[in-house]
Image (cartoon, rainbow over all chains, first blue to last red; front, side, top):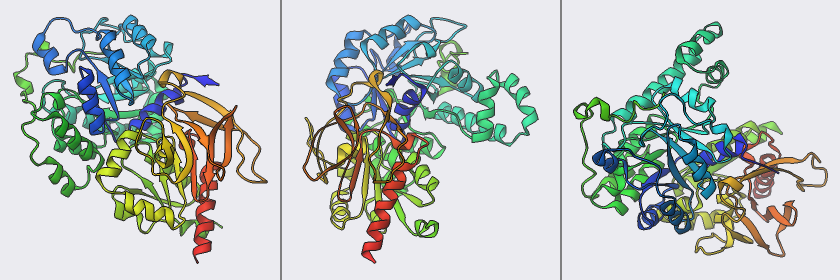
Length: 293
Length: 204
């Protein structure tokens, strides 16, 4: 019997496909998310919009909150560790979370290196804004990628940009003659073997979800039609007027992303979505998506 | 042999989960597979796969989109149905601490009973598919897998780990608590296609 293999780690991400992973900060929110049909929850102390508002250093959540949420729901529970903070990751593994998000939403603990994720049995998801970044994370052992978007803004524009970046670069790498791939690997800052995989398979070697700014069923459908395998909704649910209704509507929209009639029906009467922030109005040093290297 | 496979229409429930992997596996066996997202799409299918995914999510969408009547009809006609992991949970007669379960196969199930993700595992298992089946072990992948805790008298056991049943069949319903769609080995999908082939032959 073997545990913690790459197939087992990526396998859980395969099972989450076509689903919605929701940020929650309490047992009550976790139950609302599960009842709405979330495939997993991300246990946090604050949703990204509140992290942004609070400022200061954002750290891993209190394990007590995470454990209570794990006890309250039967779906997988994820939790965030700071970039490079392998001790936080060790703690999260010790309490038995199902996935660790090495996340730019928290304040990075290391400005040069990410966690060596091969050291762990628990799988990791990591953020990426382009193909090189995604492949570097996979080289470090990430079993799932999510495009970053700009968390806590309720503005989907960065999620679209990052997803299109990765899709376009995959198309480009797949179309190039093989003799160019070593140079491409150098330019992307990614291992040659992974660039070769993308060239041959026309896709990433792991599941790719999308995150950061998704706030409505229409946003979810847009992201799914652009080719994401599934979505993370952070502040978009519990910062909306009617979280239970919004959560259910986003779940339905993610399954029926190609059916405008269903999308029209589920989008009706949801109350107001979370407040959206214009990205250019955010001071550069407060942008989250530029964290990670 | 090959040509009659092409005439079969296999539906894969595509509400959530690893439906794409099942479609790839079925196509790899030479048959055609289609995503099923709405109940009417079941009508022209000869067999159905309910994939792995989150059973709570899939069951809520089954309820919300009123799949039950057409699924019942599909089952009663004797059309083969194959459930893997979450799909097994949905097909079971009883699920511990839950009120879902379509009840098409006489087994009792406990969700996540092999543990959380860090306890997920791979194991080589013996398959008992038919008299002359390939004796090679099957690389079975268990992810937060459900445990079959009780098996009815008419249920045929097709795979075990120790004392735990991990694959079973009753009439037209096949279940596995692991994920054959994540292995390259296609023997289980071929077995399911044979079930569909026999159903179609009987109908004609």
